[in-house]
Length: 259
Ligand code: BV8
Image 1: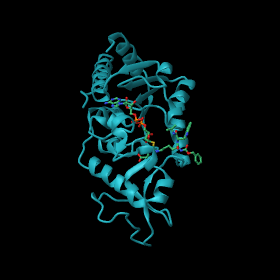
Image 2 (image 1 turned 180 degrees about the horizontal axis):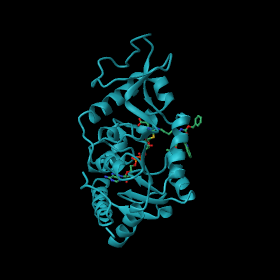
Image 3 (image 1 turned 135 degrees about the vertical axis):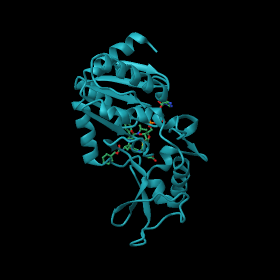
Image 4 (image 1 turned 90 degrees about the vertical axis):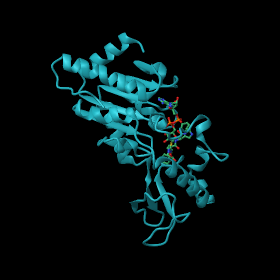
């Protein structure tokens, strides 16, 4: 890790009040949650993009629910990793720290993050296809596939945004507002291709924020990043956290040891 770059970023962070963080599947990889791209993105022979669509659900709701039941079974036992925990800890270091996630695994909240915008929904929530009531369901495995609404018997669907479906307008608005108001934006563990989430880092740059990307490998956004730290989020974030807290304490700020 380039020490001079870390020192420069730590200085910028020490003066920042509003920070926004965009996360993707990569931040949960070290917790054991499969990512979308690459060999992880496969379930049986289906690509995630073909199962996570209203058409697939229309065609075969049981198959789509089998896939979500499998993912819920994978996610239920896993714990947040040091990457999630550092972000939760940063809530006490900045005046405003918001996490905008594409992940549906709920691990940011599990790590203690309070200000989380779940752009693509949450795998532990279901929605009635008749009256769109949203409720929580944590049963794994699901006793019945496809599950039905306990009130009206209609099919339940995951409360998740599928490809070709619009995101919740108020959540998207909030994500862009947080992005355009921050002084520093982190872009962590996302391949930065899925829209509209992938537009957020560019909006932050246009609004004058410093954008910091952390990823195992460069992404289409990397040429526009002010800082790019290649590597694992669960290793790089704790390092940045230690350096930031050291510099804040050196500056007389009360910044207790991190997670
Ligand atoms: C919409 C919920 C329209 C599902 C998800 C052509 C051009 C532009 C756009 C489109 C287009 N064709 C279609 C579109 C639209 C489409 C889109 O963008 N498609 C892409 C593929 C081109 N977008 C949509 O369909 C959106 N809706 O446009 O609606 C509309 C508008 C108005 C009215 C009606 C309709 C909806 C998008 C949301 C879909 N739902 N998830 C579920 O989870 O089941 S998207 C899903 O895929 C994830 O949520 C996430 O957003 C995306 C996966 O991306 P990542 O999270 O980044 O994960 P990935 O595996 O790709 O990458 C992981 C990265 O981490 C890698 O870079 C890797 O190197 C790195 N990494 C790995 N380990 C680590 C790490 N980094 C650090 N540390 C590590 N340890």
